[in-house]
Image 1 (tube, one colour):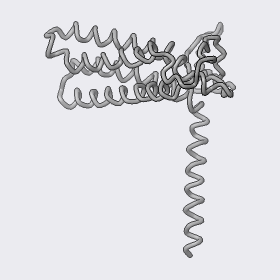
Image 2 (tube, one colour; image 1 turned 90 degrees about the vertical axis):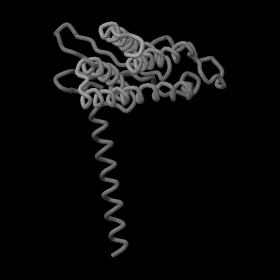
Image 3 (cartoon, one colour; image 1 turned 135 degrees about the vertical axis):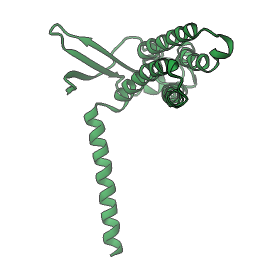
Image 4 (spheres, one colour; image 1 turned 45 degrees about the horizontal axis):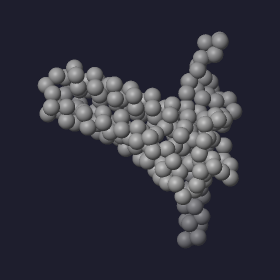
Length: 205
């Protein structure tokens, strides 16, 4: 399926990679990718801890800033390219074709009877909890830095919001679908609410 979005081509396709090595494993295994689960949280949590505590252990703003940006960059790469594919069967990426047009691709593993074997519920919860909670914290840090006039930290915090927010947006697109699908879902929900309210008013009258 090919759709236009901000002059870019967007494709929603299935994930056909061959790395579905967990297909034959037991359903009872709660965390099938412990290393991926660890690093899914390690870099982003470490960046937050360093941001909160670095001034207590170091007087060098440059050293703190470089450390945080490195952790955020490692987190962005790991979550975008590794942990999403292994933990929840999702992946998003961008490529430019020969004509110079940018294509955004949002991939998700096709539903199959073996999905229960390839996607662990525990891993899915870890993935989405880390993916949502950390960007929310960076947004809070951004407002805190702005209102406390910590201008020098504002660029670092904005970097955290942008990098982790990009992964959150990309995986939501993979999970839910294209923007058109989101709009149709919202329209359908509002229509149902309006119909329910209208029906209720008719019954009362």
